[in-house]
Length: 70
Image 1 (cartoon, helix red, strand yellow):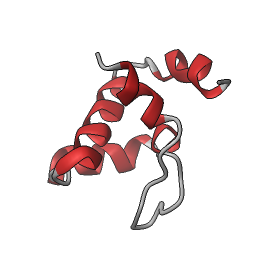
Image 2 (cartoon, helix red, strand yellow; image 1 turned 60 degrees about the vertical axis):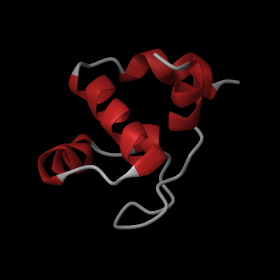
Image 3 (tube, one colour; image 1 turned 120 degrees about the vertical axis):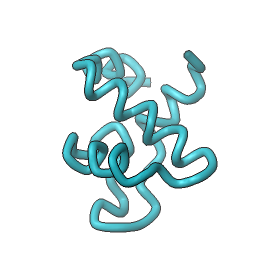
Image 4 (cartoon, one colour; image 1 turned 90 degrees about the horizontal axis):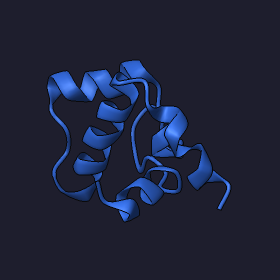
C-alpha cells in the first residue's frame, strides 16, 4: 500500500457532489458503497475512493488515525 495515498485520504477533500469539502477518509460508508456499485471516477480521485472503500468495508478506518495527527 502506498503511504502517500493513505496520507492523501486524510487530507484531500471531496471536490464535488453531496459531500463536497469532506475529507475522503470521513466520507460515509453508504456514499463509498454507491461509488463501488456505480463506478469510481477516473484518475487519482477514483483510486483514492476505491482505496477508502476497501479500508472502510474491512473495518480498518481506525488505522488512519495516526496519519490525522501529523
